[in-house]
Amino acid sequence: KAGVTQTPRYLIKTRGQQVTLSCSPISGHRSVSWYQQTPGQGLQFLFEYFSETQRNKGNFPGRFSGRQFSNSRSEMNVSTLELGDSALYLCASSFSGGEGYTFGSGTRLTVV
Amino acid sequence: ILNVEQSPQSLHVQEGDSTNFTCSFPSSNFYALHWYRWETAKSPEALFVMTLNGDEKKKGRISATLNTKEGYSYLYIKGSQPEDSATYLCASPVRDGQNFVFGPGTRLSVLP
Image: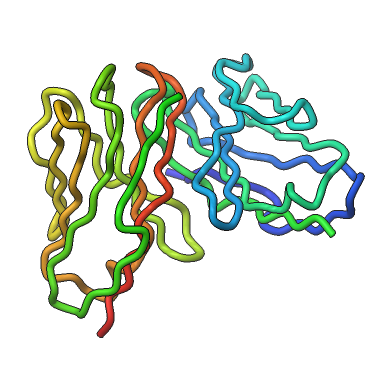
């Protein structure tokens, strides 16, 4: 079966711009979680969507937002980009959320 | 705040050596402990799910044990091979069925 698909793989943006990242989960998986990894940091939880509703949220500013569509695909948006937002953003899907993840390959965002 | 720690931060071993590393987590309110392997330029891949009533888990040359009373899990690799080179992550859910907190990882390099 197809894995978790994240697009785009790489992205370069300028400070102040906004960006939208996309994640298509494994078919049948209803939970989509987003994580950020920056150099020297572990995976930091951003938020989780389940059945089109945000179920959990990490400690990130309001510039980070997301949504989930009826087909479980999820998008993550970052507005007013800062240099510190440069990171690898990973999406992970699971059937219900607690049984462990299948990860996508990530989107590497560089803010210049 | 749930804190998951891993040691050592990095490890270099010779091909054929056996090795192990540690994941530490709060022993109270344990729900589960997940191990992932993350190879460079790939997605994190699930290895084991350790549960409260679980025994040692094994997959080929890799095995994991769990001690919930003292709050740690060990990952063992027997006869390390260069293809075992990766970052090994452990993660624990904040609450049952909720998002995971990841440790910083142990980066393993197996030298031929």
